[in-house]
Amino acid sequence: MPRALITGITGQDGAYLASFLLEQGYDVHGLLRRSASADVIGERLRWLGVLDQVQMHDGDLLDLGATLRIVERVKPDEVYNLAAQSFVASSWQQPVLTGNVTGIGALHMLEAVRIACPGARFYQASSSEMFGKIQEPVQSEKTPFYPRSPYAVAKLYAHWMTINYRESFGLHASAGILFNHESPLRGIEFVTRRITDGVARIKLGLAKELTLGNLNASRDWGHARDYVRAMWLMLQQHEPSEFVVATGRTTTIRDFCAIAFGYAGLVWEEHVRSTAALMRPAEVDVLLGNPAKAKQQLGWTPEIGLEDMAAEMVEADLARHRARLGTAPTLVDVRSTAN
Ligand code: NDP
Ligand code: GDR
Image (cartoon, rainbow, N blue to C red; front, side):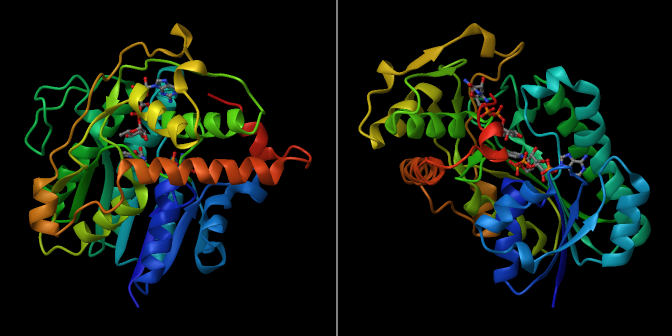
């Protein structure tokens, strides 16, 4: 039975990846950082019905000793480094933490693998944010990077360290340059989930309006369930490499609003307001990926389209709010009011 270790297993991608690997017959282990909210930390894995099928190991990406001991104990065949401070907007508020977790944290995992389990295959969660102020209208593995946030700079460091450890020490280390991917398990602070949660609240009479930032930004959005399959495919290749994972379609925030509100029979212009307070110090205006290499070499194509994904997210948020109506607020409700 192949064994996988996932950092960031409690996040959106970690939960879908754990579920996918279990279906493939893997023994799945996760690095879990200690939280005072232990009762809700496994919420995504519980939602997918796999929480009791994964083995958790106490650790934090900031702690090299802990990552080393976990890799030594688990002896994984595959390591997926998904843990990060992943919210771009927060990276201006917490640039040092973001650098330490998102950048140096990846180096800790690479060091742990190099020292304790050099035969393991390694996946680094790189990001389309590294393209930032885009240097080509359609971005591929060959497009030069121009990061625009502390988050993107940290990701670029981790990306190049992954390549450097492959070239220096012969690690089977791959990096997926993933464009935005969403799902009902997306964190509430990200724009698609803010929108689908807003749609559900307005539809159920719990709110009247939704305040967003820059409506003109445009993203190449896919579904997380499709994208974790691409991660796994990368580690099944004989040769490690870098792969862009994207849909090849870009959509503005404005148009995503139209799709999500429209699905619920609402007119978005009647409810959405844009405020300068939610604009970023430096914006990534548009991203559009070319996934040709992933298609050719991995045989990967996305299966879930944007409209279907938006509908699934709106339905999930409607169900969440309906379930909560008439019940006392929970910790999850408190989080859902954040930006
Ligand atoms: P999430 O924000 O949903 O999950 C992040 C995960 O990292 C959580 O499990 C979190 O744990 C964990 N984590 C944060 N800090 C630490 C730490 N110090 N030690 C250990 N674990 C930590 O992210 P996604 O699932 O959306 O993304 C997965 C990865 O892919 C991230 O690295 C992200 O930057 C990258 N990425 C994401 C894209 C997307 O569109 N989703 C696109 C491209 C790249 P906890 O639950 O305790 O907070
Ligand atoms: P992003 O995702 O920064 O691309 O990073 P996010 O959904 O936060 O922003 C996308 C775009 O929407 C604009 N926007 C808003 N964003 C948020 N969060 N809230 C708002 O109210 C709002 N209004 C407009 C933003 O300005 C931006 O242009 C995500 C993360 O998952 C990263 O970890 C990952 O690396 C990249 O995707 C690829």
